[in-house]
Amino acid sequence: MNSANLINLAYIAAAILFILGLKMLGRQATARKGNALSAVGMLLAIVVTLLDHHVVSYTWIVAGLIAGTAIGVVCARAVKMTSMPEMVALLNGFGGLASLLVGWAEYGKIRAYGWDAYLAEFSGNPVFTGLVIFLTILIGGITFTGSVYAFAKLAGLVSGKPVRWAGQHTMNIAMLMVMAAAGVLFALTGSPQLALVAFTAFLVLSLILGWTFVMPIGGGDMPVVISLLNSLSGLAAAAAGFVIANNVLIVAGCLVGTSGVILTLIMCKAMNRTLVNVLFSGFGADAGGGSTEGAFQGELKPISPEDTFAVLEAARQVVFIPGYGMAVSQAQHVVRELAELLEQNGAEVRFAIHPVAGRMPGHMNVLLAEASVPYEQLVEMDSINPLMPQMDVAVVIGANDVVNPAAASDKSSPIYGMPIIKAHEARTCICLKRGKGTGFSGLENQLFLMPNTRMLYGDAKGTLQGVVAEFKALAAS
Ligand code: NAP
Image 1 (cartoon, helix red, strand yellow):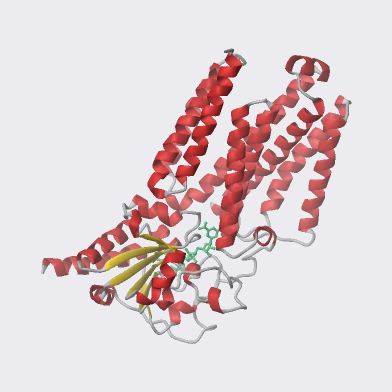
Image 2 (tube, rainbow, N blue to C red; image 1 turned 180 degrees about the vertical axis):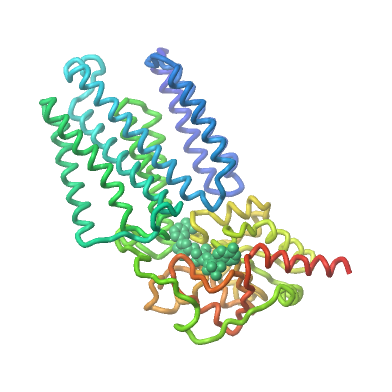
């Protein structure tokens, strides 16, 4: 068997490991193993690629490997869980840039050799090669600047609000059409001068379009956009795989592309929005920093940690509903501690997980897993809702939109139709938040004013520590 066949066999093995790993990532119990399996697949793909006889010099590869590893280790340790979405945005951006550079380098080779010599040396079809170079630059460029802008929005370097102006979408569509025309010209023209003009046009426009595409999207919708950009970075990599005829890059790129699309659609569905609505509606542009006072009838009824302890001490069925505020206050460890104390006190404890609680898919699952909350206690929204009327206490930890009853009952609400966890159906609902801040949707929440709701004000970690202290004092007495 020649070395090309051996390399392709190893690539097939790597692709199988990627697919098995992805499948295992779908369940919490197997996720760690799935991650390790995919990593082994990636290692195999890298080692085999480095053995390829096309590698001319290892100097730059080793330098890149050392620099990349160092930056990766520092980021993995330093980046906070709440900053993960912007970290992912940056990584997507670099993925897009890498693909763009592959396409650019290949075009550089064509210019250096001349088409005829290039085709004689590397074989292939000039129209196909031209088109995949175009696609690599187009998708890679949009992904790069779009992701950098998304990162800047999430990191607070620019305003997180949608930036909109009249004719914005028409302008974006016009740019896309000019790029498509330039791409066709690039692939079909025999003239090196025209090809250079077309290449320059779609390179520059793709970088501009990435920026202007993300501009009208609101801060709260950024996780969906990041998931979409992640998908695009995969497609850019697949296109780059066609450019350099590398099978494993094509397979891995397609896997990232398709899983990114699936994730994007799952997020849209859980928010009861269409992708078109997320991308083009400018959701959040007009939302003010509303409070829970004014629009709804009722009164906010504060409760102290001591009284919260008294309510919980008597409860037999308790459900915790975590949201973005739990991530902000990093309250997951003290929540686990409280859950254990409640179980020792004879209560049955569950954690209700909403698919878009927090700011990224699986956000709550990751935090609770980090705090060693047993998987069995995590209950999906659809499974917990029928049980809600049997719950003595629902403890809402920094969640807001995902427990807003208006989503189920108020047809005029912008989030009407979004599935929620029905915290309001529990006998008593205790909501932990710092003040009257709204969630990402900027909407008021009637839950906080309902007769069976009590507000435990303060940073969630601090107030929960107060409740835990009461339980410990009881045990010690
Ligand atoms: P949320 O609606 O954003 O509300 C978070 C609440 O946490 C706020 O009302 C805030 O009130 C409170 N809070 C903040 N810091 C706190 C702290 N240190 N201690 C206690 N409370 C604190 O959160 P959510 O209910 O999890 O909803 C998530 C939202 O993000 C949904 O609207 C969803 O559609 C959207 N989204 C999610 C994803 C995803 O993938 N997960 C993607 C895109 C969009 P105070 O300021 O008063 O404390």
